[in-house]
Length: 392
Image 1 (spheres, rainbow, N blue to C red):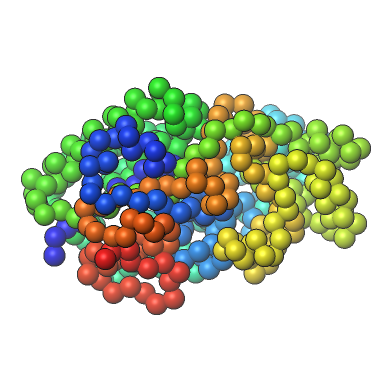
Image 2: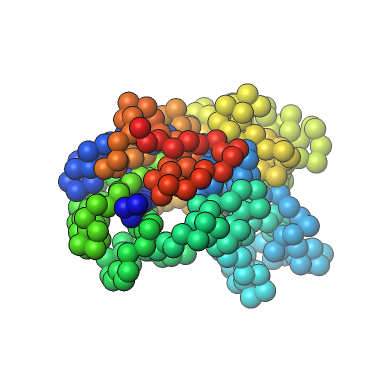
């Protein structure tokens, strides 16, 4: 069986292959259908072959007060006295001394959320993608290979690394493994900062393509008959409008901070103690242009229907090309391009390319990655997956 190499480029949209002649030279090219969500949902689906409604990862933060890393804050009788940015930073640094999650995002700094709500939140992802038993809900591709005693090598997939392309570029291969995974995460950050069509990003795309070509050349010297699969998890859409949702609530003579909420770029998630609170928030959000509340039908359509309210009692989705200006992550001032929009948008598509034949007229989905990798390695595909091998 020839060895396989899989190449992942975070956030690369299909149109950007015009700047990457090596990847564009792969004979089979198609589009990758993304998910309604961000990287945490995308990576879980592409590594497990199931949708978020099965693996249960959708957002970074979830409602889970019993396991919150900030539950010790309940000891403070007057949290309003420590509710300012320097104190929030200090509280996060303190929590990091005792809480060491291994997930990709670590323990993030909470920016826009009153401290009184922090103790209700926990991280949804507790392990790094390649760790054994990454998820309790489904085995990952890394678990499947370990269980089958298939050796593999991961290059560039480093937690919180800003320039994973440098790690790929500097890597020296030893003995060729049955599966090699090259991970370049830089495209997403560049796109957020400059847009993917900017000269700054394009020059880097050219460099990434050259790195990949060199690495494939090195591997082909060890085995000319190399099977190649390259893909991305989503595209990017340039942001044209930023909405201050706090100002919108103030315009309606209300204060968003009196409700337990999280803002994730283009999602507003709320939890309620009384039905009157939900009615009030729905009334205010109905007067907000550019988005809508996710109902049960849409949640099922996009495979994000959850068994409980861990990600919100009410979830408002802001559609492209808009996003919220103030989020749990910060002020979004430097963000010029975004993802996380509905997969119906063509601009949200990622790409997929290979030197193995597949039906390029059909959209591939992220859940197809795991079964396709296993199939290319002549390994059995687990039962109960949402995805399927793409090879013809």
